[in-house]
Image (cartoon, rainbow, N blue to C red; front, side):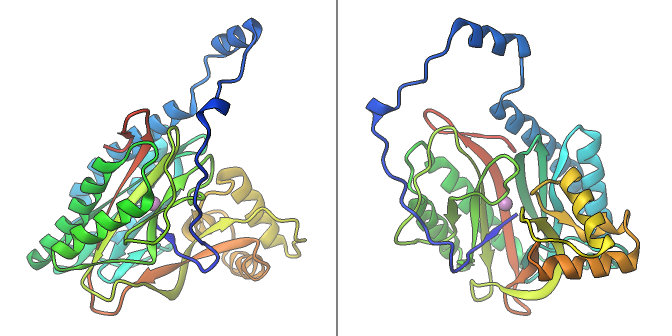
Length: 336
Ligand code: CO
C-alpha cells in the first residue's frame, strides 16, 4: 500500500556509520543460552512467513480478478485467506480501478463490479506479530493497457536488481522513472514505496517513483516495500474525499462518545497501529455509533484517514509491488 508524499515528509540523508563503532554488543553465556531455549522466531523469519502467506494469497486471488467479479468479494476472500493461513491483516485489501491509484478498499455492501475495459490493482497486506508483507499486482481487461502493466512491472524488477546495502533511493527513483517513461507513460511522483517496521506500514524512509535530489540510504537488515506506479494521466494523484481505510494514532486525547471508545478498544486490540477498514468495524459496531464514533475520532485526529488517491478522470494506472529485506550482498524478496 503506497505512501503518499506529504509536505512534512522531507527526504533525509542517513549519516554514514563508522565501521569501527559498529562492533556487535557482547553477550554473556547465560544470555546466549536463554535465547536458544526460547527459540523465538526472529523478525527476519516473521517477515519471511508474512511474505509466504502474501504470495500465496496473491496467487489464489489472481484468477478471481475477472470481469463480473465484485470488488467486495476480492477484498473479503483475500482477508479471510490471510487469517486461515495464520497471518494477520497488514492492511485492508485494496482493489483500485482505472484512474484510482491507491487506498480503495470496498466498504460493506460495496456494489462495485469489474467491467470489461477496466484495469484493476490488487494490493495485499499480511503481518506476523507486526512484521509486514506488502504486495500488489495489476490485471488489465483492456489489451491496449497491457504495456502500462508491463511498464510498472519492468520498473519494479529493474529497480529491485540494483538494491544492496548503501543503495541510495534516489537511484531507484531514477531507474523507475526512466523505465516507465521508456514505455511512453508517466510514473506517479507523489506515491512511493516505503520502509517497514514492527506494526509500522509506512516507515521513515521512502522509495520514490521519480528521480529526486536527495534520497535515503538503504541499510542491511532493513525491510521495504517497493511499489511502482505507471499512469496514462498527469503523474500526480489527488484525494477523492472517499475514506475507507483508517489507522490509530497513539495519542492521549480524551474520548467522549461510547461509539468512539468501542472503536478504539477494538482497533487497539485487533490492529494496533496498522491500517484497518471501515468494513471491519461495521461488522462489530452498530451503524449510528460507528458513524458518530468515526466522526469524533477523525476530527480529534485520533484516527488517521487514508483518502482514496486518483489521477485525473479517464486516466489509467498500473501498480506492481514486492516486499524485501536488505541482506549482506543484495536483497531477499519475501513476497516472490
Ligand atoms: Co506498500
